[in-house]
Length: 387
Image 1: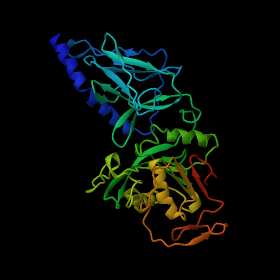
Image 2: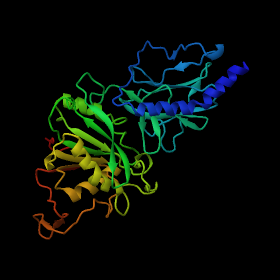
Image 3: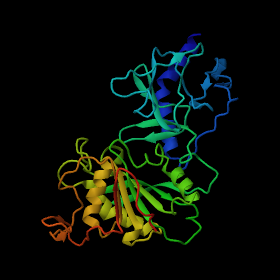
Image 4: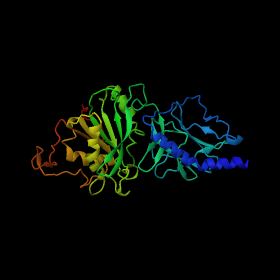
């Protein structure tokens, strides 16, 4: 009995480490699909005999997504006194400011569980809080990274847009490039459409920038960008394109590997005063890397850029001084706009008549004002399909 209790305590101490290892393995897996959970699958799987003849530890299924869109989360923590579920506002009713974290209930085998929902179809981030210690779900290989941590990921099917369907699939790759602007190696995620590997075609390119809490992984994990693009292309609602999802932060998970100096956590890219280091990296290193490495069309009409929140402001900082390079600009819930954060390039003032007396606009040097053929949108995706 004493040996069994010691083994259980050892398991609890290693719960966090095993969860982190599972998260790192999942981050290295490209194009992972959600597991189909059969209604007949047991919630607790029968494990093999324990070491030294000790009773085996249960191996719970988590998350278990039912046909009614109810989701059950489970974690084995027999010695824990309290287990809670935490989500960054993704799961309805779980987390949020001023909202107490929901508690899980322990059964006789030491497995804590709770069922939520039904919840809308979507991808949901979560972690367990075991006696105050935050851990990912060691039974779930799917994860989503932020700039400061890693969450487990539960996918509830039922969306015509982002479900994993029987259609031709592209690929999402985690790529690394040298950043001379930041003095190190940086990571980005790149989607290539179905058939890219076997064709010789060149494709339009769309640069998609994330928000303040996320990283380059977020669009393709919790955002399901790869599956959304597969479905839209298969339905004829989007033309095949290459989508580049860079790391907008230059600190934390977005810091350049090997860089001697990185911005402090208070220096938010795209927001504040002074040059934005990400914008300089984008124009100096990322864009040339993409155009050298991938078969992309390099004319103005074949480039688009859009961003959410912090990425919206970075989009403006990149695109407005470079309207000769980007014909399509999307800004979604943009972050704070302030001067001095744009891409570095010589500028001169030039008046452009707006058609109304006494009104004029100022455009950067070597650029042209938007024309009727350009698309600059805010808050939603609209405009012509790039080709």
